Length: 166
Image (tube, rainbow, N blue to C red; front, top):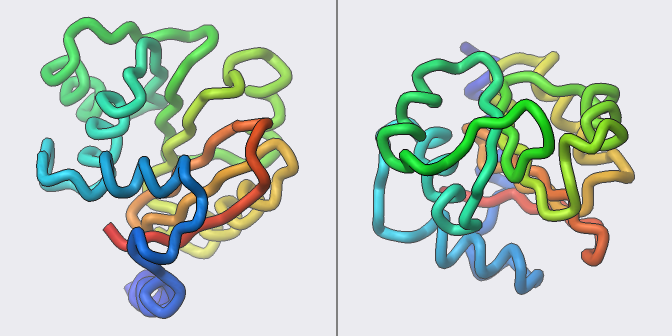
């Protein structure tokens, strides 16, 4: 409990809103998607997932071990295809840098793929996994939203990390 509270206070001291974002890609994502008035779910991570699917027009996704989120996605986006192969969006609770490298080398993630990681500040191990992921040379854009983390594999973009309040 104390760890999560301390992490949240650190997050608040570093976080910014859309005015602190200088990347056009991230600014557009934050203002038109994350800050949109449409609310899909009370859970912030589920809300980010559902908003992102619509914003990026996701066609294929893989949700790792979360049947509740799978049901939410099916209810909101009945045409979306779950996939074990190449995916536009990967949702998981835990991912380390080694796992990310395996996903990229296997072709499961492509240049426009998005990875959404739940509970990145849940415990010291999750927070360390997150820090290792954002340092990965394969990730160009990372966003800490406190409740979850977002990673983008965009080779055309300069590596940047954002801490955004939602």
